[in-house]
Length: 127
Image (cartoon, rainbow, N blue to C red; front, side):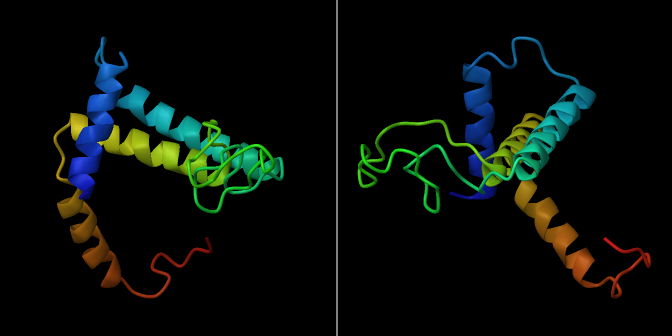
């Protein structure tokens, strides 16, 4: 699936689950994206793995090793972890961009090409 198609699917899911009964403002959307990043930081600070709590995601630390069947993705658990929270931020970003009709693939490619042309450590700052 292409990024724009994925973003549209994410947005349609958000609409179907009632998150657009009242159109969110851009500041609200940005705050929700930020909250997902904060949740990723908390998972890190709490020493949690990248992915856990779910057996049907590659690389997950399975908490149900004796009772689940990875082939079938059982049991159906809520994915948790640093990577999951970062993906939640991406999902919220894609939802927002799809809502505004942004061609994500075009913007990503354009911005990446620009970044490749920038000098080494442009701006002179560390991290």
